[in-house]
Image (cartoon, rainbow, N blue to C red; front, top):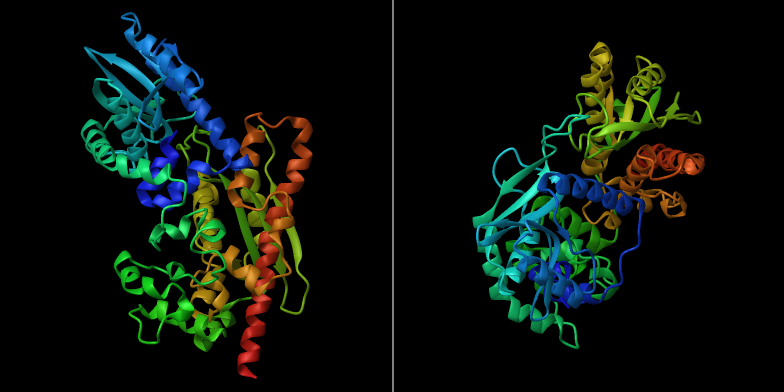
Length: 485
């Protein structure tokens, strides 16, 4: 049957929904494991706030629907959890139903923060609208539609008002009506024996099937990879399919034109003025990278839900371009507030002179956070922030490579410019997994017997990030030297 994930994928692209209906379950990564943990914690609070109720549980579809019908028919049932409904080929599970006169409140429990004003984000609205469409079509009389979300003002240790209910009835029922109108076409497309004919759209950029099963197979430079591409411009460029096939007079922004130029030629574009900014680096050069964790439920006094807290840093230091880099690192202990220890050690290692090379504004935000929670150290962090040098700006202004496809993130740039550094060999190879591993240790989901192994993995990942900046700096100087020769 067609559940929420495949249906919503099909709203964006019928082919994507068709694949989603047939795809195997995604592997359980640390990031996914952490999301499951947070979701379970939010669900626990939701049940506490909604009160005792009938829990259907994750039964097979027909069994779950029969149990749901029995619970709804029971006049004593005030709350029903995980109720299951179906209409035609569509099936949906409601997080919670609360009796409301002759009808029911349909409640979606989410682990995100409640908005200070207005409605939750569109992704949440679509999730609940699908459930509302299926439940209404199955005969459920809906009185209200609402979300239970984490109160954005939640403080550590708080036990009352942990979740905030947000009414979204009008928006959900309107969107559910849209979904009901789409349902016959989506059902026909997703249950067909052959994949619906795909069309190049902006959603292709983030589609997990685009490069492996769909229009992007064997295409290294699809038009949708152009930076800052609008739907209107894509309409005018779609027929070319590939960036390398775009004509010189194609309707492009200046930056898109630069990208198309280098992709067509196969040769990088070197901007001497942009690379000349490397001369502003003052020695010794410090290459800094943080990893942070953003717990849904605050761990420390004064913290807000999902506030990013640095728990680890890696620092390579080079006295001059001819000297090999020295390395320092810090990884927080489990079970105690590490922020002052991390801050003081970092300030000591950074000293009071020399540029601090980073990649993106992220490190500046983390330094600002540390100065904010440790006000006696704020002047020193302000001085450190004044020494930051962003290598991403050099890439953006000084070097355009065909392999970048207009993007400048470090995970896009390093494989092109420093191919000998391979993240895929690491046990942890992404920032969200790093944060999740630390968080799962902190909350006790990973036993202490495995902590040493996890810590080694975290240190290796963060160390590679700063080593990548060292090698990227070298690669940029090499590009500049070759351009001048």
